[in-house]
Length: 257
Image (cartoon, rainbow, N blue to C red; front, side, top):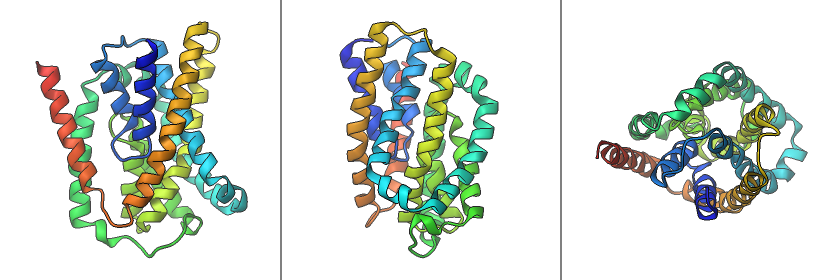
């Protein structure tokens, strides 16, 4: 990869990580559009730069995390189902799903339809406005099960957790913030697992690419988080569902051509 490709992928990761449109899917599609070869390093790069986005959550929410030990326990409770399923499917995901660009547009398309239908028929039934620490352990575990669906590239971890949280009666603002926080152990574990398996195989230029991608994703993700928190005050997720469908159809047409 060259520097501009690294920066573009970092921007895509930072913008999409916390929006319900799939960061992994968008990075895979972007890499395909930029004609970047699908190598082991590219797959590691796509996982590693997610740490930049996760660090933005830590910077914005460190006071909440340090003051609410009970919240940390609930984040762990939500993380466990995802960790078990993700560890079990790790080899399948990296060897097959991450190498198949065709998986992403179909996941984007189906996910977009699900978001629109959910918002039309169920989205207004979310619970009362409560902060993330008030989420119950039962709800946290159920959210973790929903998040596990996002091992499929294109599904979107954010979309899965938000839709799951709304489905179990959590208020929109609370589940969006909980989704941010749940990303910390989820993506940290994915990045560490991948780095352990690939440690010592990177060249100096590849390490520099990882660093640049990390910081671009970090800065961009801060803006994306603030945007989403402001957006949900007066809007639902139907526009994201429509965007997913349009993006999926355009990419399917591009692939067919």
